[in-house]
Amino acid sequence: MIYFVGAGPGAPDLITVRGKELIERCDQIIYAGSLVNPALLDFAKKDCKIYNSASMTLEAVVDRFIYGEKERWLTVRLHTGDPSIYGAIREQMDALAACSIPFAVVPGVSSFCGAAAALNAEYTLPGVSQTLIISRSVGRTAMPPKEDLSLLAAHGASMAIFLSTGLIEDVRSKLLEAGLAPETPAAIVYKATWPDEKVIRGTVDTLPAMRIELGADKTALILVGGFLENAYERSKLYDPAFSHGFRNKEQIRKK
Ligand code: SAH
Image (cartoon, protein in one colour):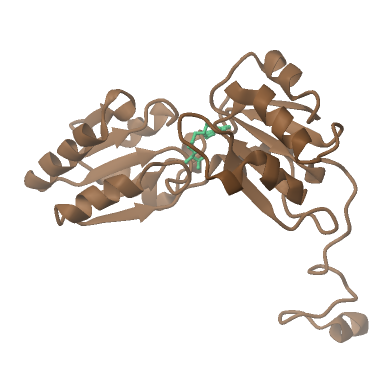
């Protein structure tokens, strides 16, 4: 059996209980070494076989899965954050299905959640934005034309931009091309939840300077939108003048 496990954004205690228990029990781990915190491997049994997929091809990873299955091993495929976001797990799942090898996915805390925590931010602020766009700049993976940042950013929604700090000039131009004001708030969160986490705040206009200040290209997210500012409306959910399924405003008045 193969488990695709979300390792979380970095801090080893941000993996799920289910994910940690699988690491403790498994016979083989294939982990995405470029981003997964190796401290998570300390949970593994002493004789657990450990492979870093950073230098492996899809075929080599699938060979390890098949070998493990022949040995009747429990295999953990450890991906950073949540495996459903830029995890390249679909092709692995399809390869397993083609060999009739059973698998399951254990979700994880994505780095965009870790970044919000680092910023003390809420992406869905009433009166500001009720939508979070998760996207990336065009790199070696082509972007569907309708998903170009210059079109997505026109919504004015909160944005979490992955895999793009190395292309920050391009991100800035696309955001401006979309019509965002140069002073729209922006932040770069580097290694969210790791001990060396860094938060740099600025605006869309200052994004390239913020990256220079950070001095790193990898393991960072670009966050953009009014949610990074202080103005918003309070929520209806906790408003005493508003009733919902779990709370009646008349009852609150009587108390
Ligand atoms: N599945 C992962 C994303 C993998 S793509 C997730 O759910 O988070 C790799 C990109 O994720 C990096 O280029 C970076 O943009 C982002 N990333 C991953 N971990 C991060 C972290 N701890 N802090 C900031 N960005 C991170």
